[in-house]
Image (cartoon, rainbow, N blue to C red; front, side, top):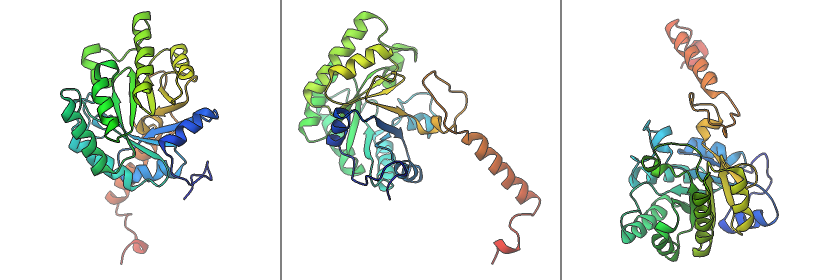
Length: 273
């Protein structure tokens, strides 16, 4: 089934994302963590679905992304892949799965690809992890990089504030972005960085740059599905646009169900055997 915004039913690939950048077509990307949501997101015409380690927050209620494990990411990844026909599915490698040891990183990456059937993995970091990135790519695993605000490093930063505002950090981000392209990453996510810097990176790289809180000068955008659908409350960063208020819709519907059960209105005669 084609998305209602596209009649192109061909599977999105890493190569097709590069073609989209070359012709100036923006790339749409959204998270999903389960089969049902993945079917909906894919059916709406999404180009890329990210099985983010944000599942740690959205699905498990953790304060940070750090607690989620490889096994849990594989579970979410498998669930999403089963619901997707067209979108490119990218799964996050969680904290601790590649940072400590090169061999463990490669093994974990291969296992995640084999068990989830995903199209690619996303890894946070720049030159510090270039050796493991290079080895994972050499093993045949496509990597989407992630620079700027890197949630797995939140305890190092101590804040979720905008990154790369100072010249030294900005220049390192540019160097890291070029390095990720040079070693073979097919795309890079920039999170919460100044729009001018993000636009510069996108213009200098030949691979697509996807932004979240990085302005409109990049090649595509990504948001967390629960945030943009208004399922969550109390999280309102400047970059977030809510396209619905599902929190209210769902609360009203569930409240009505409770009331109907209590009043014996549900089930009625036509709803029983």
